[in-house]
Figure 1: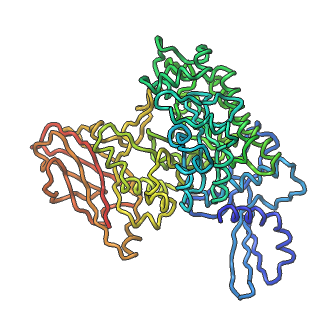
Figure 2: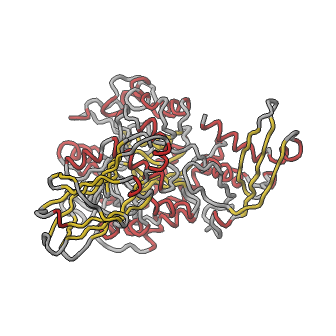
Figure 3: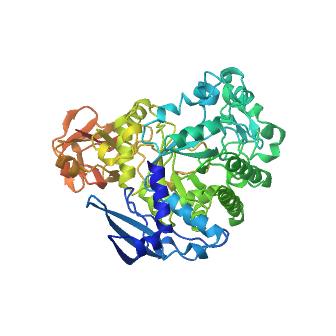
Length: 602
């Protein structure tokens, strides 16, 4: 079991001296080496570091600069078979000289770097409001927890509603209980569960631990579904006592909304808001046996009134949020040491340091100060290739989990194809090929999907057909926050966001394909590979030159409005692929490219 393996690894360093001095028939080879972050999700070396006495002190060295000792232990069993274990630890750890805080941080590093934590699953908590049909433990767990039994999910990031800042469905004394039963909320069981003495969070934690899954308490840091209007938004806003009684805590009003973001967003400039966010996480850490907390800054990314009004935020404003995150980290250490088990800190943020700074999140400083353990990036909008997030997080020893969400491309047919199993299999393959430590699956409730069985395994994913789109999310959906197009560094082509191809102006599109076709062929598979380029207003598509990875494509298939080519497997590169298009002099003056996809079928 995954947790058992972790505690075994934790026990090994403690017993290291005993193993060296007394193991009979064991050969111990110690080598000094440079610390290095895992480059792939499959590596099992553990990276550990003893942090400084105070979390508020800035680290002077990065994980890569710390001296480590790699211990290779080869044990001969009674059956004369040999097993080898590699454990990378801080150089010659002496627990007798470590403070309690240093020991805690040492254990947290081991827990953070658990290589078996690959598949994070986000649950938005809607089952208590919509899908719990009876007031019982089974009624609570049946919709979204029982289906996770015997799946590949390693950790559940659970949000107890958290829709509208401060409103929750669990028994909180800090926030407001969302027990509304008006209109479409008529099935809401939050109040009935409490009156029946059922603490559903406790039951969810227990279920996860019994089924070898971790449980993270998640909070949407500024959810503004109460701005959607119609029955849903109006009821949500009117039910929120904090927002209706304290309009001064919001970034705007309905009559005078901000330039960017939604007017129902709370303003983190206000100390009251930051204190409440802290207290909500503290309450969860004190009351529940959770494995970590998750700060979801992507729901929704509007945090400061000045940014909502289009102003550039000074460093002092960014420091307000950093101070809150720092205090939350310190709180997890206090509560974690009380119970004798670390509490991890996870965040979900846009995948751009610059964009995060524009909205008030100094994420690089957070990682530099060791305030977070897990970095989840992106949502309905992706700004950079996954490799950007991986490089950023691993630079500071933080584990990286790209968020794989529904695509929400504003074209029904294009969106349906991007939501297919073939597209999810391709997206996950790209995540693994980027060197990420795992992935976060968000807003995905098709529990019969093979993704829940194979999403964490590249070997198994190799058995599935794929749709590798040049762009899955287009320009994205950012809920009217700070303008983000200038931060996008990846293709956005889709039917809603067409790409112009003008005569005399070639275009180049670079996009990832993580498929290991060589391995597929070695396994006896016969891949069929096709390139499809969808066009609009192309009267002479035969006058368009297409080059893929340096090879000019010839003899397109006869498909209306599409340039379609059968490819050889070696035409595709495992990694970044470069597509170039050009209109010949005798061709159309202007053509629109509406989609680009490489299909792989087995």
